[in-house]
Amino acid sequence: MKTPEEPDWLQTCDHCGGAPTAFGTFKSSTVILIGVSVGTQLGDFCRDCGIAIYRSAQKQSLVAGWWGLPFLATPIVMTQNKRQAERFLRLPPPSYDDGPVPEVGERFGRPLPMGEPVSRSPALIVPIVLGLLILGFCCGPLDFYP
Ligand SMILES: [Zn+2]
Image (cartoon, rainbow, N blue to C red; front, side, top):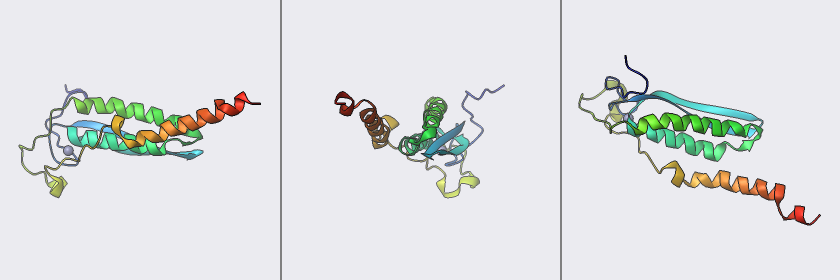
C-alpha cells in the first residue's frame, strides 16, 4: 500500500499536469488586531509547483502574520508548511511524458516559478523589525533612565 510519504506517479499536478506529485496543504496566516485568517491551498502538486506554493504561503505569513494578538498562529502554520515542503523537496523534477492533461489546459508543462527561498526573501525583514521594535519598547533605553 502506498503511504502519503511516497511520490505518486499516477496523479498529475493540479497546476501544470506534471508527475510525480505529492499531496500538500499549505496555509498562510493573516493576523489583524484580534482576528486571524488562515488561507489554505491544498492539492496534488509536482515538486516545482509545491515548492512555489510553499514559498509564497511562507512569505505571505511573514508579512501579514504578526499584526495582532493571535500572532502565535503564524509560527504554528509556518512549521506545518515546512514539514509539508520537505516531502516536495524529495520529489524528482516534474516530467510530462504522458501528454497533455485537459484539466490544466494552457498551464500544462509550465510549473509555477519557484521564486527565492524563504531564507533569502525580503519578507523576513517584517518579523525582524517588529521583533526589534517590541524589544526596544520592552527593554529599551527608557528603562535605564527612570
Ligand atoms: Zn506542477
